[in-house]
Structure formats: C-alpha cells, structure tokens
Length: 230
Image (cartoon, rainbow, N blue to C red; front, side, top):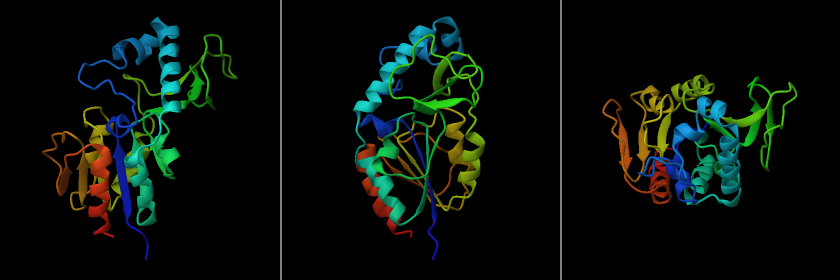
C-alpha cells in the first residue's frame, strides 16, 4: 500500500529551539538589525559589505547549531508517510536531521549565487567577501530570497500542497507571503495540523487541529495524531 502524502510547512519557530533567532521574536529586529538594512535588494545596493557581514555571521550561527527533537521527529515520519518539507528557513537543520525531501522557499545559507544570474549557484561553508565573483564576473551574493524579491520556488510548492493527503504547519506565524498562503491551497477535505506556541489566525482553513506548543513538544503530539491516520 502506498504511503499517504504528508506535506509540512516549517518556519522559524522550529529552528528557534536550536538557538537560531528570528526577526519576529518581538522586537522587530533580526540579531539587532532592521530587515531593511540587511535583507532587501536596496540594502544590497546601498551597503553590500554590511549585508555580506550579516549573512557570514548567520552562516557561522547555523553551522554551530544542531537539529532539535522537532527536526528529528519530522524526519522519522518518513517511515510512515511520503513526506515533503517546504521550509521558509535558510538553515540546513532538516537535512542534518535526516529528512530527504526538502524545498527551501527562501534560499539556503550554505549556497551563494551571482548577483547578475540567479542560475549561477555554488556551495559555500566560509565567508563571502567583496570581490568574490561568479563565472560571469559578477559579485557573489547570498543565495537568499530577500524581501521585495520574487519567490521562484512558490509554484513548485503550490503543486506539492495541491497533491497533499495531509498538511501540517510547524513553527510559522503565517504572515510572510506568499508562503503563508500555502495553508489555504490545501484541499478543504484533507486533515490539517498547526503546531505553534501561538496559533496564528486562520479563519478560512477547514479541518484544522491546533497544537499550541513549542515545536519540540508539538511535533511529538503531531506524530502521535498522524500515526492514527496512516
């Protein structure tokens, strides 16, 4: 018998318990920076050195972080479901926890790209410096979808959600679009679960089970409920 397709949308809340902060932690800042200073195309044009410094620091943060019980719990669900994780996170904690099918909506911290050609993508573990260039001679920049930029992976994500038999949301405030809109794309008839320490408002979503807990506790409860649906 084929496994049911489980699609999980994850956000910053799942990585927060691994020590990776989000700019939505209450003060509107991301590690002390306004988003407009470090995560928009205008910020890159205005002060590329500051942007590179910020993401170089983020890369070191992610390298030092470890997956937590929520990451491992989702990876273990592959034993019972055909799991696809759609993540808003730029870290690699899902990969390191053992999940095998992951779509990064907003880019990846361990990749870089030409500022001119978004198809020229490379892996990186260290720092990006001003003067580091791609094959086309253009400055290398983080492989991150910044605010005010299009989200190239959203069409793939929409198709994945359309095909889901079960849909879950873990650790996202559902306020960053277009990712937040994915929850409304899932078929009305399929079971849906939302895990977050503060459940976001979702008036137009049906068949929702809310688990108002931090990701590590909530994913444990989610797994128990999902196994009843096998």
